[in-house]
Length: 264
Image 1: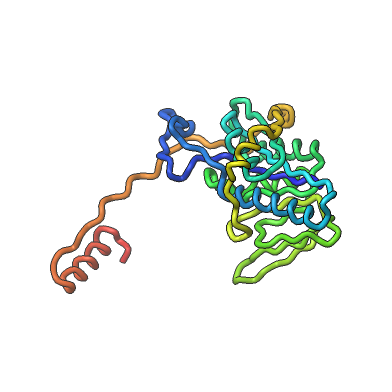
Image 2: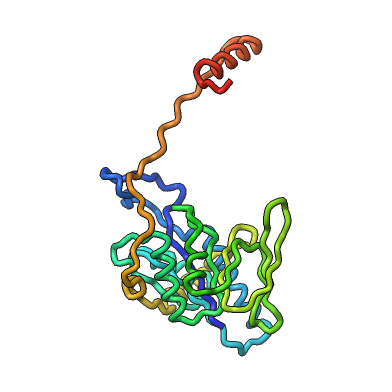
């Protein structure tokens, strides 16, 4: 079985974001980048799936591969996944370009098709753009079944498919039985991602990293969306402190809500 994990490197939420002077994007200087948090659950589930298969059938051929599209710095995210326990990495060089979700899905689908993967895990969305669309479009390009977003994953006894549970509105759950190939979106609650151990970090340095070019899979596919005129949200106005006794404060608060905030 070949298991793929699609991950994205994103800015750390604690980084101070600055917009470029021309509004074309963000200044990447001094921005710390991390593995997208939802992708960590996908990495962990891929590793656990391999461990479960090996526990029942030690000689079974199972390989885990982590894939990421991005500039050279994306190698850091790939090395993190390798240190956690993934076997191999594929870095798709973005060649200095920025792709929208449609183009990203086209590129990833090309790589996945060439690799003939059986099972593909990914995060439910990336925390930088929050589009939550790449996995679904990738599945459409490949004509693979997909389930978004899963709470539980169990292999079928023959390891040729899976029982997948997802939560829907009102606390209800849906259970899907699907055969491979299959794409699954992961989120918090599915598992608890492991930390990379020191031996894992050392081993990651020698694990294979295949380098590919995005242009080899994109063809003449153009973007469907463009992001322009980046702006930071406006600064929040300072709060007001009301003095006096409680009845006076209540009266003043009602006046401010009516005359200034105009919400009553």
